[in-house]
Image (tube, rainbow, N blue to C red; front, side, top):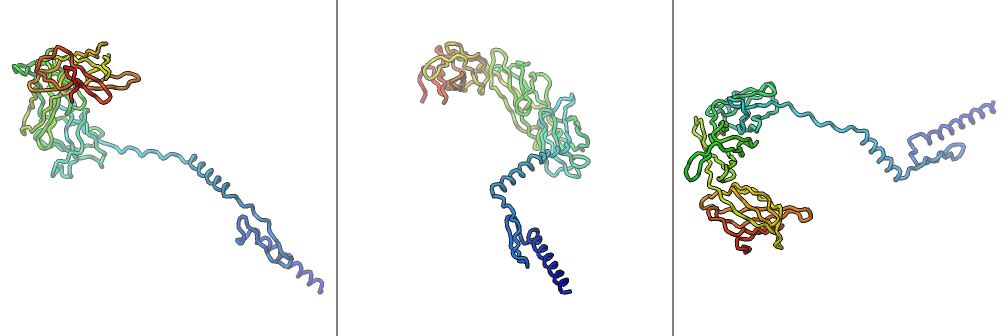
Length: 354
């Protein structure tokens, strides 16, 4: 009987020892890279120590995980463009009207104060982000404020009350009309569309305060010259139907330039740059001669001429002729123009102005 009891006690102790060993290996008491001693009736039982990971290997593993995540993560798509509604303004002939201010109208359609938010471009269009079922917009059509609801992608409006622009070119001395003369609309018609004086009159956009502006470039006919750009701005009468721009053209004159570098070597292929007055010239010849024609004899006006020359290995050289009186007779000797990287010039007598 005693032997049986002793056997049972011994078996219990063995089970307790085994449970203690398992607890030290998998329980909360031990962490990675650590080991613990467990006291048991069978003596010290030491579990197998876990391998410690060096810091370098741990950092490399983290970097690898990050790179993999970056490679697998898809690019965020760009957000879609919000839908827009366009107001297109045309005249009675269907031509697009540029420069009309269009603003968002308040709920009752009457804006307390015009607030231009868009201006029609060369295509006659002003674009707005779609707002609900319709965008309420307003613009001036002469002395009338028109309000529209934009529901479709493009809504076209025909203006009836805006004034038209009449451009006429005249001889500055006699006042005789020289029409037709080709012209290009500049400011106010930023697309640079071409037309002819005495031809179809384009519509002139008028701002909320009754003011308007325009600018044209004239292709002067043979024997004439003038300012390259002719601009006008001002207020128009409330119900004005026509705004007239008269461009004076002057008898043409010429100048001869001799283009050299700082060492006095003639430069072939130098070109004339555009200035404030009309001019035309072919590139300079082998002896550096550049003849400028089409200069206008504008009274009491002094201008300079700018020249540029480019060559591989020497870069770009630029300079200009001294100011001269357009009404004076051309000098017998060419005006020497010395080109340099800083830009310089010499007068007709060859001296370098201070």
